[in-house]
Length: 332
Ligand SMILES: [Zn+2]
Image 1: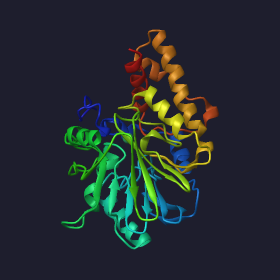
Image 2: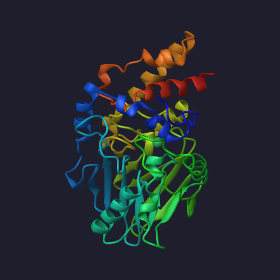
Image 3: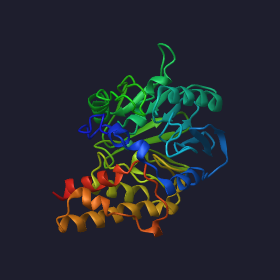
Image 4: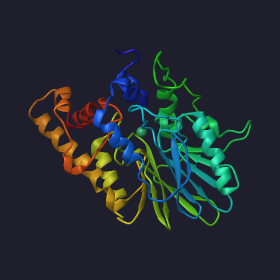
């Protein structure tokens, strides 16, 4: 079954949408995934079937999506990605646009409840649909927050997400309106003063051609977007694995930082070393297979993660293939 256009490599929906969802039996993985997504760093202030909100510090909350359901691999995907809320005296920044407009609307309501005001700014870390598909939900009629993304992310979103017409039977919602940035983030680092709290927005690359991390220094918190994953095998569909590795090493170098990964539960950087282990295991296997002249699909089929790295749930069996394809791209 291949009812959607699998040549759209850049479209997140390719990775999630082409045939495999129902097939993702994840017989053993489902229970593990359910248990893993339930791990919290702090008592949640809000819990829904699709996400919870954990308070990291005064004025700083993380959204942790919980997309694995009880009845199978696929649960409620209203938000699908992680993100957060950062409040200052004068402004409220939301990290990520989430997957559906209903998810964006939900988080706008949560920001209002927790901070007393609706988000004034929303930053999208990259163009994948589970991070920008819900941006329209933050609008209140003619009003809406400033939308922050890099020029490259805006361009990629317009180019790739505009093609996101889900096939019949696809788990994707109707193609959402594609919203472009109202404030373009520069390459390098930008500082956003929320009033008594400064947020650093740092342009990076590795998961896609343009990724942004959202960072606080006191307390040290990193919203890593999809450069960082915890307990869920990462999506390499657009990745440059060499750049990804470099970015991850830099992001995890402060072992005390609280990490909000793009997917999976919160962590302290020191406890996320298994993620680097996953990336390194993929790299070693891909280099070996490439040297041996193995076809990329065969290499992916033969791959398993060392059990010492713990459980890393696959959103989709195609994710290993995407990882090996990414390595074969850079290995030539
Ligand atoms: Zn992504």
